[in-house]
Length: 303
Ligand SMILES: [Zn+2]
Image (cartoon, rainbow, N blue to C red; front, side, top):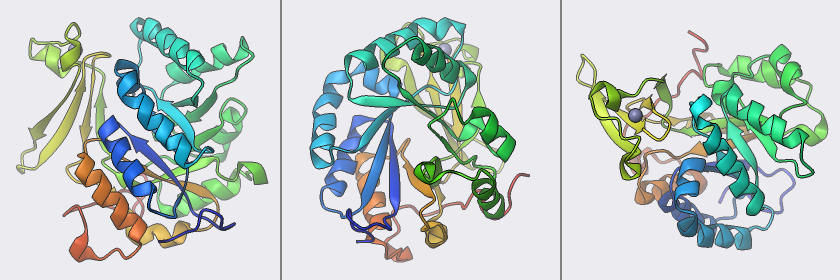
């Protein structure tokens, strides 16, 4: 147990789940841990497609912690043709007030929600994801009035992250403006073409095949998972092993960022094991639930 829900100096975790199985796994672990989680991000496509599977889980989550904030994470690529999708999502969120806002890494989504907020009494919160690149003081100052939070870009090294946090001069109440991802498979490349279409088989008209995980092999024989999304026609190529900053976590225990654990392709069993391993705080390598991992740019910074 690394923290107490009532401790003033608590570490704040934020959890990203792609599917209901991962979220159910999170709830099982959270129920038995004295860990403080203040925010959950859920994949918007997945929630919109199957709201009934999520409903009970969301009620369970709120009963475990009524102050848990729930956010929907928008697709990484949005085009003009996705406008009806955004309207559908906005309608869904307006009718189901359980969600406080959105997480988004592109201007299209953030701009859409900004316009909706302007014309409405109900204001949804808007969090910029790591790929929005709010990575220096000028970017922060330009966007701070439109955003309720942001994720530190993945390309910064530790010294640059500290500089960003210090230079933004965050007021007390916004000290948790930033998320920092400490676990998760990171995207190596986002391709806005449709690989399925290149292969002559775009699945845009087959909802059961919208999301699939395939893999590609590089010249050294390493397999990289690829998630295809034919609802919006883009692909994410992920690194072959996850980021894990468990060894660096100690340095981030000051009350300044929310530590995000970001689940994408993990099974329910993996998700549960990884959360237990992180929250058990022993970090015994013999029990580590993933064999290889990377520390990303934490030490090397922007290349
Ligand atoms: Zn497609």
